[in-house]
Image 1 (cartoon, rainbow, N blue to C red):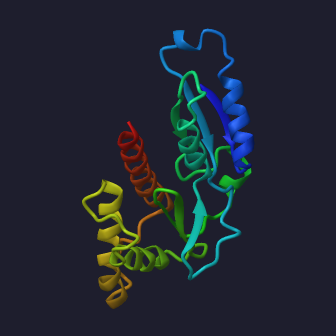
Image 2: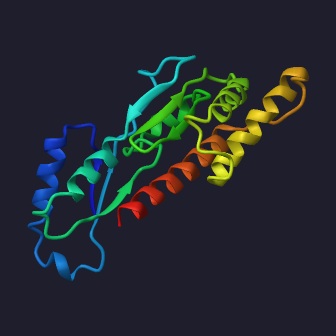
Length: 193
C-alpha cells in the first residue's frame, strides 16, 4: 500500500506520485497494489452554518483521472479515509464536535454544518437532506441513509415534544456517514470495472 495521507494538492502532484509508484520493483508480483489518500478537511471551519457546503473529493477525482492513463503499468486499487481527515490529531478529540452531517456524492462531500452541542440540528439537517431527492440517495441505499431518513422523520416528533430522546450522537452520525460513503465509493469503483 502506498499511503499519501493528505492530498489537498493539485492533480499534477498526485499524477507525479502515482507515476513514481510505477517504478516499484516487481510491482506485478504484488498480490495487491493499493493507493490510499484522503482529502477530507481536518475541520469544518471553512463551512458555513445553514448552507449546503460542497467540498471536492480530490482523493477520488485524482485516482479516477489517473486510472484512464494508458501509461500506467498497474492501476492501483483505490483507498481513502472516508469522511475523516487522514492525519489523526489526538488534541482534536478533546474538543466538542459540531453537529454536522457529512454526506458523500460522486465528486464531492456535502457538509451540513451544525453548532457545537446543538443536537437538534442533526435532526433538522437530516430532515432537509432526506426530503431533497436531488441530493439524497434514498433510505434504501445503505443503512447510513436509512438512519438519516429515520432521524429526519423523527425531527417532526421532536419539535412537538423536545423531551423525547433520539437526536443521535456524534458517533452514530459518523457511523451513518461512513457507511453511506463506503457504499457510494464501492458502487463507483465497481461501475468503472
